[in-house]
Length: 238
Image 1 (tube, rainbow, N blue to C red):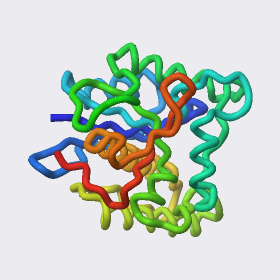
Image 2 (image 1 turned 30 degrees about the vertical axis):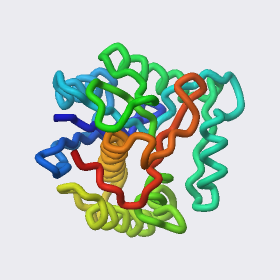
Image 3 (image 1 turned 180 degrees about the vertical axis):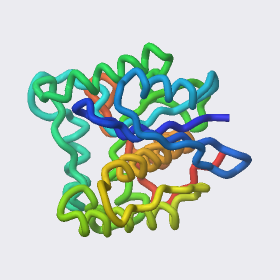
């Protein structure tokens, strides 16, 4: 059995959404979701959920940042393909205030045995980490002409779009999911983080099942990389 961990990482040390999935027979099932803040608690959760077997940790954050300024080649190439869908990504370089947090998190994953999984074949054994970009993934997976805009705007607008994303995930992703409902009142961010983490975990499963057959790897492990599914509604079955 391979475990798929989704991490919607708090780039600036804020709370992080977490989700774990596993394969049961030919089905992909959601096992657990959480939202934690201290890095030690996040890493301990990942260790518990992944156990000692094969695992993919898919992180929505830049994991490899060698460039002092500017933009990584992976981001430039992804933006060329996805900016038209409003799914471009932010520039990552060592001068950005989040750089130390996210690259340190990646190094901590490496110390736990999660190597960068940029060159895996389909259905590998082993423990890997990958960088993912959920906005671009939704465009590919759900055949959208624009991203689901649940990050900005008035609360009512964000709640409506977050509910739309939740429906798309439940309708289209080939997995047994029990996503938290979008609250009628109060903060949306906790649920948003957890739903994002579920999407990250699914992208990890998609990469594990198909590797570059049905995903695109932007960049590489030396200059920075991002994994994005390319085949709409592909099933990451075992």
